[in-house]
Amino acid sequence: MSLKTPFKTLPQSQEGVKSPANSSVRALARRAVPGLFTLAVGLVLAVILIEAQGYQALPTIMAGLDYAVGDATSIARTLAWGLPLIVATLGVSLAYRSGMFNIGAEGQIYAGAMAAALTGAYIGPMFTGLHLFLCLAVSAVVGGAVAAGLGWLRAVWNVDEVLSTLLSNYIIMLFCAYLATAPLRDPARQSGTTRAVHDTAMFTELIPSTQLTSALFVVIVLCGATWWLSERSVTGYRWRMTGESPAFAAASGINVRRSRIGSMAVSGALCGIAGALLVTASQGRFWTEIGTGIGWDAVLLAMIARARPVSAIIWVLVYSVMRSAARGIEQVSTVPSEMSLILISGIIIAATARAGLFTRLAELKNRYIRSEGK
View 1 (cartoon, one colour):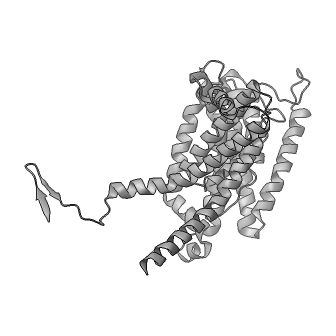
View 2 (view 1 turned 90 degrees about the horizontal axis):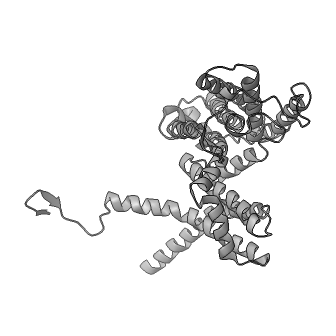
């Protein structure tokens, strides 16, 4: 049956037939519910923690949000802090997609930062674009080589990558600290830092006093490339197949060993670039605590986002706002910013538990529908 109009013939709607638009809306709603649930849990925890300190929760939270996203300068400052974390989280997510757990992101970030600092300080000066590209490229190669070596140990010798990547953090971070405090220390400074990089190895600032630089465009390109590699390319499909079922992937002709090593190499390269951004977009040199905690944050955020590139970017932005808001709350009250770590830990636990909770609710719903049908 159809309805004839002066312009064209339209299909008559039928009860029970789902249109593609409605299906897309329902699918989007289903994806948003777990994230909203996690944010609601975080909001409740924030209210409890702030009230426990003797402050009114809502005005305090609003003051923190105003510090984080109140105006263009605040947004730029928050975004600048999150750029290296976005790149590192995407890198960790790529490894997860192939079934590899790259817990060594922290060490790879330090390795990338040291490589960029040395390239920027001892090579050049050259043209700004060329020098910056060289810093990023060397950092990517160093980070990728470290992660690929650990992936090779897993693929060839079956060495547990969780243990090897975890221990690699301490080796790399301590070695970088040794370089910065002994043979490569800047003699003009008392603290453990390397020489300052040349101006040609620094990104230009977009908004003054915010540390938001033209590195933003590099991160946007990396986000698009990582999404395409993970979700649309043949290589990404092979990595996902390897992660979901290595035996089936091998039976389908996929080289599982190559997929694991390749995903780890790209993961480490992105973590290395994240370290390079710490040097070339803000610090201008390597120092012993340049990236403390960023790698661990990237691991946790990749787990919350279920290793999905788009979800990972969204969660990093939310996390950046939370960290910036925590600093703002600390300025208007005596609530320490460390309380944000407790809040973030609660959110991570809620995000981890949400899958089991929603699965249980779905089972109860199906049981109720079956009972009503009898």
